[in-house]
Length: 105
Image (cartoon, rainbow, N blue to C red; front, side, top):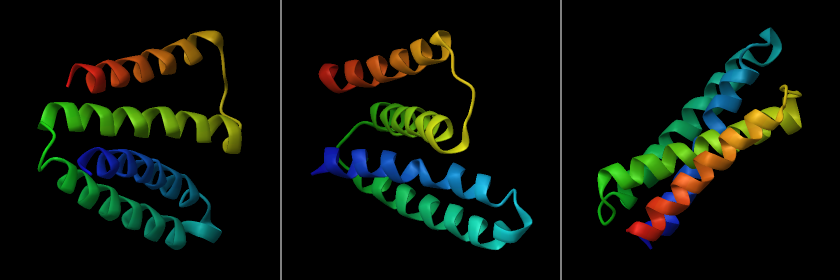
């Protein structure tokens, strides 16, 4: 169950940078901040649950890896962030590192 908590924590980790991006616009400033805080709390609580059985270094690296790769994809698909082969290679390296941590556990 700890790995389920960790994956969910990583997915919720994607929500708070999106909330902060929403808060950039005056019309969605407060709802964006509320969204960011909500996702921070849920993600942090799930990470806390996962760390009861998964070592802190492994849990934190996987949590941030899922969040970083997921936020990159949301930025590209929703916000039109720039892409390049090098950026995709960087994300692939993050995903590969996360997979290696899981397999080595």
